[in-house]
Length: 249
View 1 (cartoon, one colour):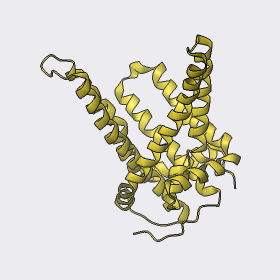
View 2: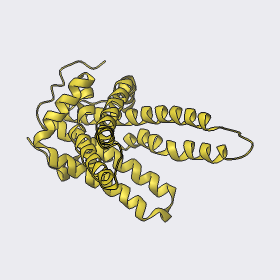
View 3: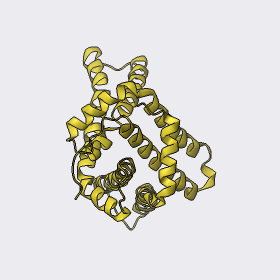
């Protein structure tokens, strides 16, 4: 069965209405940069702090690790809630959150592998061009950026179900990426539609009307991220290939 983007969003919205507590981990993940990193950068510029570039880079790495972990926890909670609904199991939110927390390291590593893969495949053509031509001319730069953006978007869409595969079917990282890539072949446009509607469109909205303030930005970011992950998970479980073949702790 193939589920379209709008149907997946509708099911994700119904899930969110029945489980509004799913927004809590997303609220923390979305609010972390705004409430933690922004004040750090602001106060670091004050004379009394005396932080050099190396210290700021170190803080940035720590921030990235914490933020990625919070993001993985929020995504894991949402996927497990979708799985519970798909299997008809009654699971309390704290049970879902506990399991998501246990699986957060795996989700974090999955995201890191995908990030490195996209980074390497985007940077590599530019490096090859530089080695061949000994300079990167403007036209080549534009072509490289264009190819990089398109390729990055394709990889993001084709692997968007990898986290669901890892959680629902307890796959390893490589197998989850492979399964998501193959399953996305017949569902690429639905997944792309979700990405455009819930990621790109929401980002554009926040860029167009920033005067509404950080509370509006935080609310839109929280809801859109939760809906996107839930909708992708619904597309995965609706395909009929999920096994759910293991016992929950």
